[in-house]
Image (cartoon, rainbow, N blue to C red; front, side, top):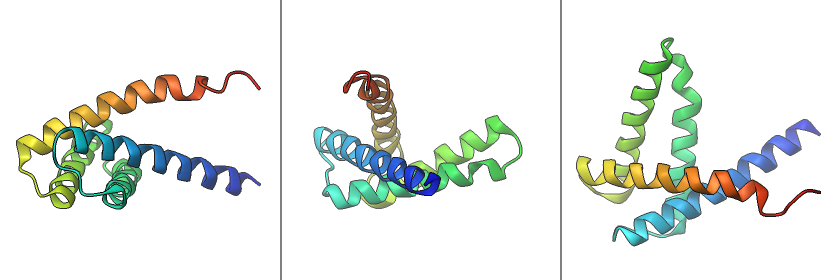
Length: 108
């Protein structure tokens, strides 16, 4: 049962992240479709899952961030600066959404 819950949580997070990436790239004028956004979100989750391979936490975060910038550049065909701005906006919006989304349905 734990695996079903974990998989459901992962898929919901993937879809929400994909929607955030899609909306941010659409607003910034670089949208490629929801499939590309979900693939970018999946790539980001793999990158951040593999980040602990680097033994120093701060360094692993930097390496994962740069790898994710490579992914954004690849999927959306943009330069470093635009990929960085896109990533910052995605992180900002995701932070807001992660703060409010769990509380929308109220107590069960």
